[in-house]
Image 1 (cartoon, rainbow, N blue to C red):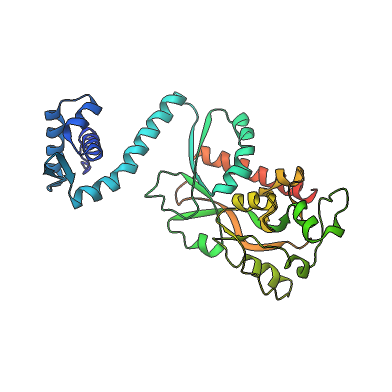
Image 2 (tube, rainbow, N blue to C red):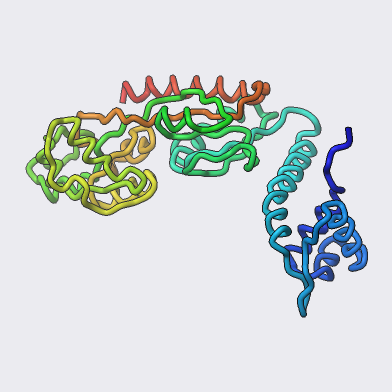
Length: 318
């Protein structure tokens, strides 16, 4: 049965004309004649049985239907291009895995370890794009995602299967300079790597808040049965990486997963200031569309599992 798909050439001409808003410039980009581009778009409109452009004084503009069609096909054209380039670069060997990843996890945890996967599987290329929100695999060109969320969020993500990676336990951290300013008697000549401040002491420090989790400090204090009157106040930043930078520059104390600030802790730029950890409701998951695993995905999941085990052991011995 013939698929209801127009020719690829007509789609490419349509995309170029929509971008330039003129058939002439589209023809120059595609090394075609203006009449050839016009003919391809006419054939596409006849195939769809509706107009995609209407003429204006200096070129063409998309109709409402044309705007919607362009929005829907751009991702697929980009996916075709990426798949072709991937196949050409690997010469039919190995392959690629396109991942959507939450930003701070990508930069602070995954990327510093990814060289080990590359050494083990040099024939596989990993492409990363950051995303802070769930997405629909049918609308975006990711094979899978690494996402931080609650079990309920993952369960309600349509058309996907989630593979648990690790729990997100957050610790209270700040710079030694901030402690010297508020509690000079606790730090003398040398800075300890950790302190164990009471909830009352912590509530006296400026709190750094996370925009996407505005009640995180209240949850932390509540878990210790302490009523902190200013638990919802303080500077707000969207990402854990932004909180880490703010904390290292003495702007306040932040709640951040320990695995995301290993360098700052080892360099003494940040210190853990409470033995209490908030075992958050959020976890990290490897999420993929409900379809059979491909061999590349299985290898990456296996590697991720090994890395999370290694990380867990390292954190225990920190």
